[in-house]
Length: 219
Figure 1 (cartoon, rainbow, N blue to C red):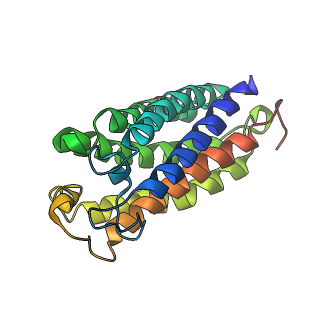
Figure 2 (figure 1 turned 90 degrees about the horizontal axis):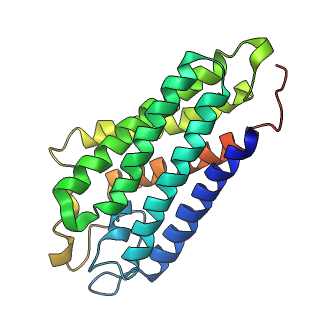
């Protein structure tokens, strides 16, 4: 019953390794390296600008599929309605995660649409699972209630990104002109916050997956 944890761990491992490798080989037109301080995550999958775009986009698709399996297992392993709703919401969000790889920045309108719905769905998912963890009955605890603590930084990251993004009509369109710039600005708050979302989402999946017990536990 707890084997679904490995889908979460595998997804985290694949997207993390692919991001590090792709970022290491990324160079701007003038030879500057990739930096989370001024580059958006999606630029790693920007065909024609990222030399290993295929690796990053492929990892997003595979990670989305693995997260679907993990979130289904997690949602149905917890015996309350909140978990079922969270699982469904999580599956939809994971689908959007995979679609970000299907629609890289070369297809900016579609990319912006699926990316923004990933952020919205991600926020809803971590909130719903936090509630699901906390409201488990004492005699039906499947996941330690402490798992809800992983949702706090993820909620703050997702919320901050969506609030900042709301100040722009199309928050990802700012990257569309990078191909004509000698070098992007040295610091972009939205890019930094987006990387915060990435990091805390990865930590959420990893933390929750590692807390999945081999058998039912007591509170």
